[in-house]
Image (cartoon, rainbow, N blue to C red; front, side):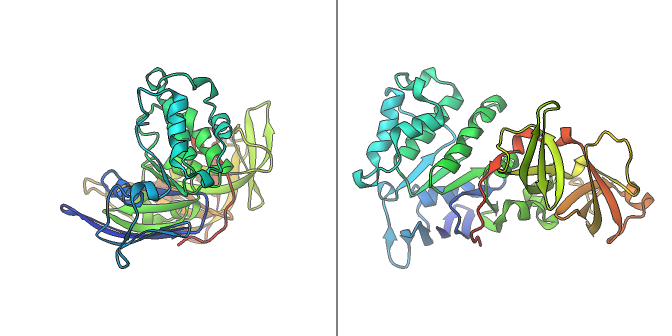
Length: 377
């Protein structure tokens, strides 16, 4: 579905990116500010021309330097949602949405206007002007305008970056609904791992203008060698699970994975649906004996499969903690002090109990996922 191989020199900075995805879900570009994420999506959109390479989306070649192909922006059939909504301030919301619709060829207008309004919950805003809307409402309208252009792909460049936490929580469910309701692949740029874990199927790690790794979100976020890129402080495990039941009395949801159950704060997802659980390494404790009468609701038996190397902090001093991977059927990363490592005499192959508080699991990273097992590379 998506084939990217592009090169561009930008002053002293060079972007050389290559990745593919056969999914129709969300491909997330993740990296630090200045790593080249926006330059990559701008080349896909045609806002920036690569020096060389090839861009192919849904079977259509948008750019090919060898064959002198470089489609104009309006020919690329791309919907772009920027950090700012970029709505036309003098037009009503209805007119802004219709602007997107008019960009689509008449024979390609398959996405229904009323359905988009319903999914995004913006029907009551039709006669208003953008200045009267909240930041979250403006971004929902911008997303609707991009959808109504009936694009072959949606590009979303840090669409929540300008919003506060409350507005982000407001708009994330709408992006999930767009992902699940409309058959449009999405490239989503973000430096927020919570957003990516909640929304994405495929993770593309961008570092210094190059692609450092591509793969399923669960796989890349669990790799110790990528912690420098995925974020060490918030590092941990991402587990794909199924909603088993909801406990209304205690406000909990029971999720199952690999024959095990994990209790998390109540999520708005139907029984039988799939979800991802993010467990930070710093929120997991270890015990050698089976715990009895503890406050942690989640206790898993496992075996230590990997112990990270001792390393230095950013200031050059030796770090006093260490990362350990415990196999509980899936990789579960734990961060403990080196003192605990030595006192407990932990080693690879040793059986342990891993304890996880339900309250430590971030509700924002618990989003309903759409299963997608197609190939990525």
